[in-house]
Image 1 (cartoon, rainbow, N blue to C red):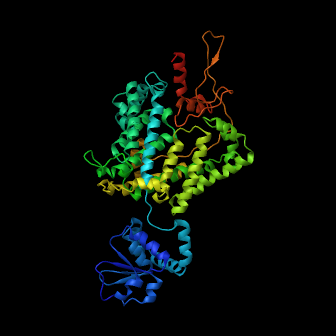
Image 2: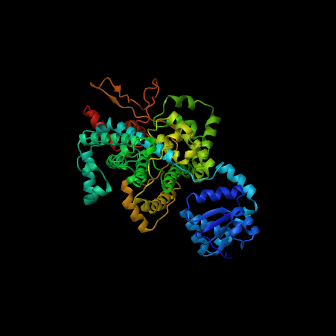
Image 3: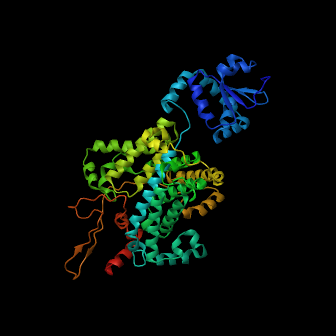
Length: 565
């Protein structure tokens, strides 16, 4: 079909009396400037060649050359002007056998049942279907991440010398020497760290303090990229040489999130400069983050939660399969707190139900992270609720705070109270981006490939062999901890062995060494310590679960005790 008087700009005609049609057209039109959208009721007289019945049954796309396409083809062409997913769909429509026929059939089914489709849309999206905005969530996320960075570094600064200082349990100089002997010239690549340049105890302390300061700067000025880069480099420098004491999953998670924060803010690197009159500390200094960035954070949250649920079943642990794991968890976890005692004594039926809820939130709910608005917000509430319950009954450092921070990327700006949104109304921050924006999509696609590889092998414990080029590229990435595997408590410990250390000055009278945070004296209630992580106390829990060969650091610990350190 053709029209005799084509428009200067491609024009989409839709049924203006159909609420379902209006919502979808307005959603896509907000991101498309190539196609004009008009209701056929007001514009059909300009194009008499198109029958009114055709306009009422499907959308009509009138091209500048006068050609007209309708139905799924018109919808996909319109979609392709506003989204990369639309461009992919258009390519598939043109070249994938059967895709065009299936698309047209699906379009006809939806068009014939628009009232039902409109009700479903209203249920899942609410009153409007505008593309989600994450300006508020992005700002709050970065500020919370800055506080978490500061807490992590301050937690380390009070113990780093005793752990890996040159008179510590695992001396840094000794670690660097072992790495040099094993890896030679590739040492600095395999273990990237600023401590290769200066490995004194003072360097360790200064590195922690620098990271804490830049974390606080990130809290105050979230879209200035340099603090995020410095914090990430400082933490990577410590993790790379920290051996057993900095090998926890939340250390890897903080580095992966921190690297995403660097990409997130680098894209807007031209948004502020010292000469700018705009205040970088205020809420109005936050630009709208790229949609690809918000999807990357959500994908990370999905991997974290889904893997944590799947590993519990993939391990074939009897306690998880028969739903009795939580009857012992509260007393056998590494560092319980006082509330854990009360929860432990709740009825067994409560713990069985808690297991089912945990599996539901960790395995099923993550798929809602990519769902429409209302389902996504429900997923955020459930996931945050689980993290708060874990936080209240155990000392898991800053892990729960990191998980809650990631959940902010599930919440659209419109969901926040008006007094919060009002702080962002003065849009002083520009959305001006730099050349790195063009590299973001390929980088995230690479992230998707490798993280999927890690998810299938780590969570499902599948022995999948990937092509050599893929493994080679991942070998270059791995030392920087920007892609990791996750999954806590794959096997539930059902007993709580404890190592009791005793000392004597005369060989006759012995006195136990009492740790500050881990359970010891049964008459002392375990304290609340998170987000601080007493890393020696944590490692003592692991050491008690197996033979000493699994905890070689214990020899250094015993030696320092003999030396009176």
